[in-house]
Amino acid sequence: MLVAVAMTAGCAGAGGARRTPTTNALYAQLTQATAAYQAGARRVRQGDSAGGQQAMDAAAATLHDATTACVRTAGCDVQRFAAVYDRILRGAAGGADDGDTIEGESTTGMALDQHGVATLPEAQRSVTLLHGQKLSELIAMNGAVKSALQMWLTQLRPNLVDAWINYQYLRHEMWPAYKQADLPEAILFGIMAKESGGKVHAVSRSGAAGPLQFMYSTGLRFGLSNTGGFDLRFDPVAAARANAEYMNEQLKVFNDNLELTLAAYNAGEGRVRRLVGADTAVSFYDPRIYDQLSQETRDYVPAVLAAAWLFLHPDSYNLRFPRIDGKAGTIVLKRPASISELTVCLGSADGMEEGWFRTLRNLNPRLDPQQEQPAGTEMQVPKRLERAYANQCVDGPWPILAADLQHAAAPVVIAPPSIVRAPVKVGTRRYKVHRGDTLVSIVRNLRCSSVQEVAEMNGLHHHHLAVGQTLKVLACR
Image 1 (cartoon, one colour):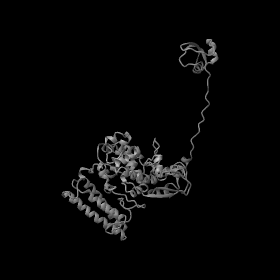
Image 2 (cartoon, one colour):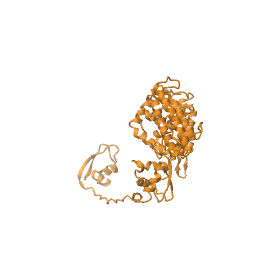
Image 3 (cartoon, one colour):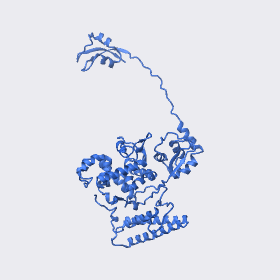
Image 4 (cartoon, one colour):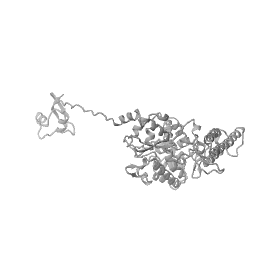
């Protein structure tokens, strides 16, 4: 469908490539780290949780470093490393063929969280399939995508990192729907980064809404209705499900052509279907398609693909996403509080310099951030904030300050009555009648006379005026 490309020139190594001392050393690290990881998993099962987890973490770090080196080494088989990651992840899910079941949570992010979602290492993400095809082979590294990569890495770099951070806290809600639909996580991230940056309550000028920016009619078609006064387009779980259904529907229509499917998501499937016709093998960049689409759609498709590519291969582009512990948690309010109040009392807890407003609002999309919720209300928060809430927002000065700010009312300023001064007549002047003038309009513009007064000054009968006629009128100040 699209031109297959390697991740970098050094990624082109195949299983049958000629070995070098460098590749042999990397394969040796792979073998040793795999054995160490499995040994650590066995220690965890045998009751040595701390020691086993430490061994697993060390082995995973070695695997990560070796994989990164392999990507940059000519002739190194990256897929060999990815297969090891896949085996580890299958073990984490309880399906390892060697009987190793990995339990607990690894700081490398490869164990399952409480929702059964694995945080996949970049090397594993890079071989995620899109209906039997490797995603890395579906993204044609052409000029449009390269230009979009540059935009994400320069002007839009802060937006990309913000989107990453927002997604990490929403991942346990959004990724399961994509995983169930057998769609790559990178595409979900790419769409979200381009559409909303992970702001759940985003609304565009055209009326598209939510983290994945559904139009109202399209949202209704995929079950995003208004329920109890809440627009489900703002619900990240429902929006991800609807987006996955839409993508699979359109991938089927366009014969698994990812670029045309993304174009349909942005421009509307009806328009793209009419342009494509029966030739679903046509490229998005074919002038018959590309030249007929809006500039917005021409930019949209490569921007989504570029964000997805950076999600897969940040290290290859000198990009480092912050490590985020997005594990989900809950709090039960001990005292009435709004999301805004919680944001104030939490401050920069746990190193979040920008504050927690966006994250708290994203995780509680049905709540008005300014509406105080009663004590006993359960709210979704990152698990790492549960202790901070108990320490900072139940007692002490910060909840008192937050409540004081919440209940403060803006002062009502009553403007003094304006003094209207009557115009002062200072003499007379001449006025030439123009086309469209009437005696009423002339008097209204003068603001210091009356129709009767002007008529009497000029001997007008029946208020008749002629274009070019000169009138004597009062002059005022």
